[in-house]
Image (tube, rainbow, N blue to C red; front, top):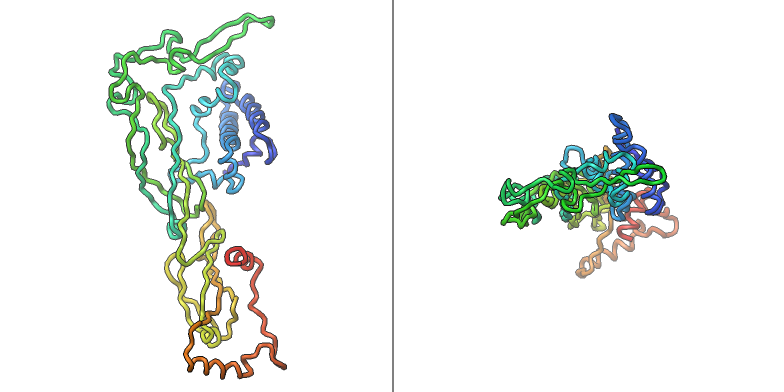
Length: 391
């Protein structure tokens, strides 16, 4: 099932402001919150869908990438180890403080949503740049990269404590991670829920810190990560690998690894969306007499037949020799533009031969009685590519 447009999910226009996006998300989150719709799987999916839409549209960089590439640009690569969607419930609730404040769900739902305790602190995301050549982009590639980042402390098993006896249940909140207060108002008793000030919502306190990580539950190290990059990515596209970022503090969930694609330049080919463009320089005799030429492609080399009388500017097309679309079925072509190569240093003998040819009637395209020779026709698509790339 294909994903819905994020703007459609939140019921807003594409040009919506940050405040409009936030307001729309609040409305959807309150409507479909699991504590307000217990056991309703459909409501839970709408709840996650709205959170995913807000996560993208509230971030300037993510929103710009989504507006350009759509869902493909958010890095959701099935089977590739990446996930641009599928928000985790713990991540959604962890972000509620920024959207609703600490107390809102305790007031609305009796503390059910606000009472969700999070062990540790979530790790931050990491961003890396990954260079890929034309062949790797066309076929997809497996890349192994070394990343310096925070990793779980092995000494304390990420707890941050010196030993098991150094972890105690928080006395202030009784292990709930939150403190409830009941206030009398003119409308009656109102219950509010706030994050515990002593354990900061973790429900536990460390009485003696681990010497290796100084109580953080993580240390700075290095990790080798295997990336299966799908075919058809583009320069500037960002993929995300869930849970491969910095380890969280004291057993908190890890952040994500964001992989930004950098497309390496090809020595002979240029890219135009899904198509590949090559300039084929031929001598004047080759154009007049015809020639079998060999051209570079993404996959290696290919032979093409240039018929006699080919005009400069002729565009040949090799079907299916371009790039595949990202997570799609379309594939581009290779466009080959023919140009006349003119030598600059000529011998006296060569000059004499050319003078003799110039005197021939067949070599006067605009002579009296000669038919006007028009340049080879190009489609609008071909013209736009070459105007942009070589104009």
